[in-house]
Figure (cartoon, rainbow, N blue to C red):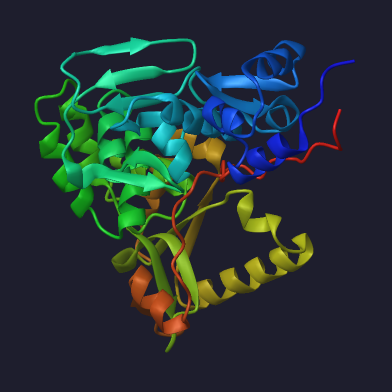
Length: 357
């Protein structure tokens, strides 16, 4: 029969949000030999040197939640003055990201005289000088700030992903200022020209990765990307439009699955029909797009928008007013949404073991 996890170690794992160090085990009078037996039997798993987790809990996590946990472990096991970087920082901040996480976490070690990077089975360490203003923490884990992370990653990924990350950082900060300050700090780093495009085209009013992908399709085709998340109404901000070209009375709406996931589907459809009827009464034309349309057929989507921009809108039956995103939220007493990825890896809510094994 495999050894069970002692109750005191279960409590320590709970206190550490799923992680416990070898030092903590010694403090609980759990010997190194006993820890080794639990590792060999598979009830514990080593996520970084001297950092352990309950395998039963880890096996219940999604790929990004697992990567987030391994990133926390790698920072804990790294030397002082080490900070979660690139995709590890993305996971900790719940920034918009790609489909699957990398194989191993990444950190930046500050103050080392070495150059370049090294990699082990648990993670990759880069050596770089980073100004103090970019140092932060997420739930006690030393991490680089989102603006720095977005610019750093945009140096090496495709423009669409770079824009998505830059939009996410700008939305979190409420402006492009952080991105604009981070970019010169990496002015001599390879690939910075690619990152400059993402910084220049970022928008702090974007609220979802799908909106960023739509914006990329418009920008790629040389179209104006419209104003993101502008509110429209007669005397009060009633509806928020994902992309709006006010002088053309044209809106583009990103139809993500989240739009219908939190309510009764029939009620959502009825509300959407009522909303579109009201928009039509104001002379606002609507183009809808999905993830597949924006991601796989950006030219087709941009072509539809370009055609609609060339067509004169019909006269409106009733006048319409507009409010910028934050103005509309303020008038309605709502806190603006912070852009996250669609399947967020939040701070792990780990499944509890079903008793000692």
